[in-house]
Image (cartoon, rainbow, N blue to C red; front, side, top):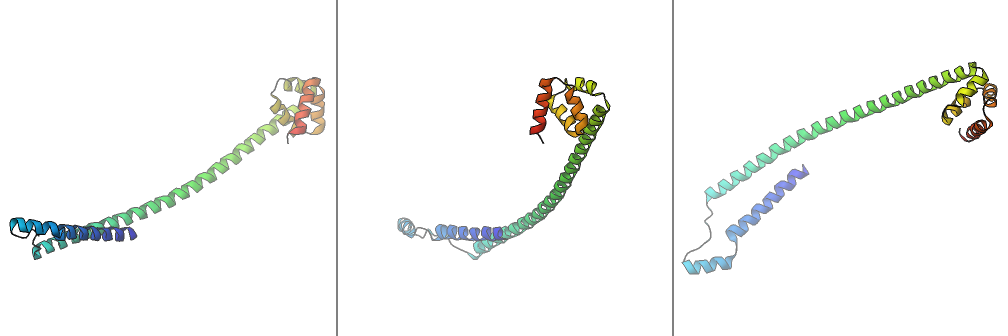
Length: 173
């Protein structure tokens, strides 16, 4: 509404400036021309021209009112779309959270399976396989095992590998 008021006010000011400069402009210049030509150079303001200007202004007001209605309709539509977008964003965030929980549960289940697998093996065979695995994988498996089973497997590994694993187990939590 403020925007519409500002437009109407600026048009009124510009119309006033136009009329004052166009119709009542530089009097000295008009007097000079009057003296040169012997007649007045001011345009004659008639009732017809005023009515015509009034009709033009009315037309502009109608156009502005129409544009304001369009603006309000677009504003309402935009607000509705923003509300819908916020709702979708919330749903998406909840979905992502659920997916992350499922992924963690799946990883935990896989790790539990690996732990039970290595716990069921003979310590020498488990140690031989773990010697070939990445350090972080071995540390994760051993961290999730019971101490006695993990100790038997580490005891079967090379002293260097066992020392590195022990060091990692003491640091990472």
